[in-house]
Length: 245
Image (tube, rainbow, N blue to C red; front, side):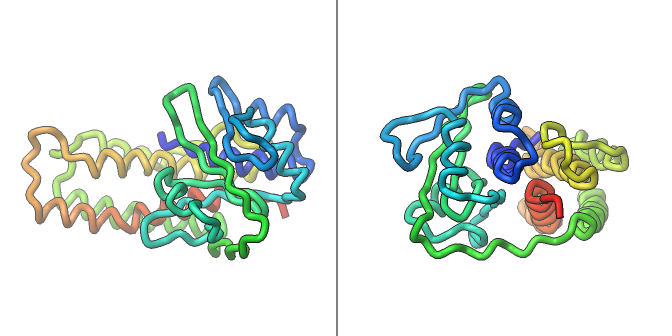
């Protein structure tokens, strides 16, 4: 299952900044059993605990943070702060506010290092236009159907037999855990599906050892999965960035 520390940070920091969560509850949800340290936080000269970042956000007057999932050729949502884009592209994720951005680097299953990038004085980037939860859910359905048909034609089951079983099980309702209790149930459901589809993408893109996969087959597979990958990315962002109206 794909993990997005920047998504969890964005959603819980926003809940804390908007008064929907206490500081302790937000911090407990973010830390879990993992060690987190932040470098580059304004006013600090060394790595500090993650809780300092939550306090700094309020002190800076932040109101909310958004998850950004940049990919090569599409870094919408990232302000033009020096060094931010390469850092976020390498990580594949960033939590972005108006005055501070934080980029995680997972050092293993038990440690995450965050780099804080000040945004004061940097022109604000317009956040990417996010579809509604219902629209991104519908886009997931369409992308899954198209990909499943193409992958069946390519006989992907011979390459990786786990993929068809995962696709067949998508009808079951699953919810992503670990988000604020007032988070929209549809957002939780959409995120749960997106996380499972991310696993499908990982398995489908990995050529099984010894599998007879031609260049033409691999190219057709990649082309079939591209819309699904985009739909998963957009659904993930919309789910984490949902806030009560």
